[in-house]
Length: 365
Image (spheres, rainbow, N blue to C red):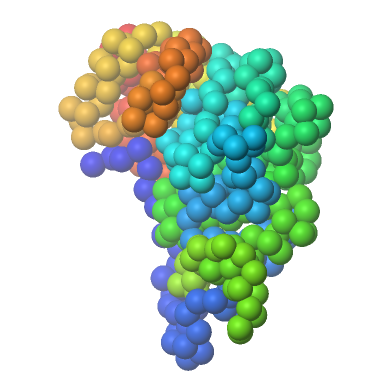
């Protein structure tokens, strides 16, 4: 079977050496030496400061909301955060878990990111934050969003789960916003099996978050915050250090895969319009069909050959009534969600399989 993606598995020999050290020290969690080392190396690699490792990407969002105080009610009613419906469900469900009402604004039809022109119309007296997503690692219009947030005194938390290692105008995309969150799930281009991180703009927010992820404990007999357990452990860090050592190899191999799709399919299909000032981490290979019927035809044809693409992100989240009561009916997000498909991309997709995938797609059109 050819899945949409596979976890990158680094050198077993190197991983074993890290694990041997864990066994010798018997220090498994609570900010162990490997967690400290990975934190430092990620800050250096990404070109950021104030990075905090947490146990997964969803908790990264929830801790960021609490550290920045946007979960606090406004005028006795739940706070609101303006976000995108074209994303993984955790972006919005994490808001609901923290008592914050997600308010959807529609996306740009070309970049597939939250459109700034739609944000201002959604602002109400209850709005405390904007939660945009760098969809497939494509940069949101960060300058415009920053201006809106400054004008209305709002916090900005970027869901940057897809944006590991992506630079915008020669600097890390993670530097934008009051916080940017990352997912290190096994399927991501950089992973720690499970895991995540938050990059804060301000050190004081980082220090508050450090307490929040460890039950609010700040000392042996001192509890200062209402916290939770979101700590990162040494085995996660060991995997992360090994994957980070080989990240450039991984990305270069994924680049070959994505460029194959672009070369073979760009005359027949639409692709995401990426910012010209942006680098690519080759995490995803999304393609946009003319219709849902066309997409379904291609999925069926690929499945017949045991090739399993995936519909990211379907359905558009504004249609999920179990989470949201408002009748949004956002046309662009719903349209894109109906027609988008992510093709298989990982470091060792065989060239013959790549050729097979593109040939099947082109023959069916």
